[in-house]
Length: 173
Image 1 (cartoon, rainbow, N blue to C red):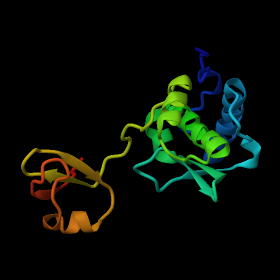
Image 2: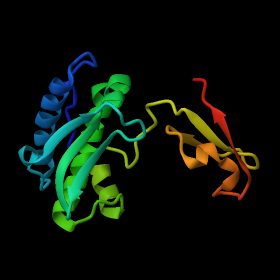
Image 3: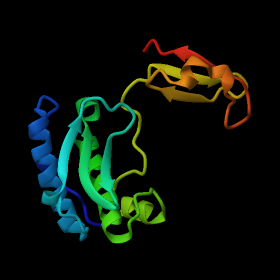
């Protein structure tokens, strides 16, 4: 297995968004070349989101064509460069699979490449939710970051796991 050198690109959380993007693009080029991914890093727009809370990154695409790689500022601030580098690898897999198979999913091809590129299929939570939707029966919890209909009217919904009644707890941190 090829070992990825994230330390060479290490950048401190005190860096600017511009610096983060510059390092992320350089790192992405090395990863794409090292693993033979069909990704033209220069052809993509690269952006940082300061609003995202639930996802560490995303690839925006239109008609199967990858256009933008989005990285989340809060993940970088809270978890540092290593976590962001893992997100870069994750998003490069999406770009590659869009280019090769018009496949933006986290399916079998994605999971296989994720193992090769030492990244996860889903990121761990890096921001505290504002609310928890809790099942009164099984105790299952769903994190919620926005004031949605589920948060405002939990009695209109049932637990997807056991069918139990739901209630909302405000997260006090």
